[in-house]
Length: 116
Length: 117
Image 1 (tube, chains in turn purple, red):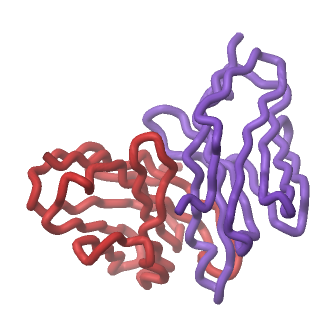
Image 2: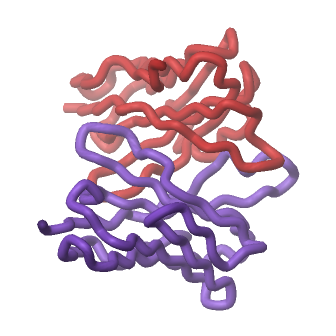
């Protein structure tokens, strides 16, 4: 039962262009969403997050959009740089009784390659 | 400062053996999490601790898996009677504040690659 899905295993983008990574979820209880970035041989690194009370959160070149009715979120990277080449994971969580925010549910990941 | 460290980085064992995987969280971080990651997949939650208390172990696949954090710092994930299907990357993460009623950023370690022959 994959509650968080990233349907694109890979994405290739030219340097300077926009990268759009997508994520869908099925559990309507999720109320907090995160994107992690992972380089080879390293652990995932937190990138940006969004609460369900918002529909957009921006941090520099990175913007996350949340569409609750569609149970869909996306990460926009503008402009894309070769150093952004990595695996990107979306993750979701919710609070049920004050203990569940410790549990992140991850998607399968999307490999982003930014070509110079 | 030092990040989350895990040891060993690689572990090869024979089916039926017990293994212990260690996680050293970032100094001062009170919450610690264990995940398992299969090849080509995202991390899958196993369990987490606030201080020494195990708050949620709903992700542990069966009773061969256990975790402890006796002094609220270093944690050990133990897999008894390993099976080939246990082969995966085991990742540990820690967060500064107490996980629970609000979201704390989780900082991940490099993982332990376990191979069961």
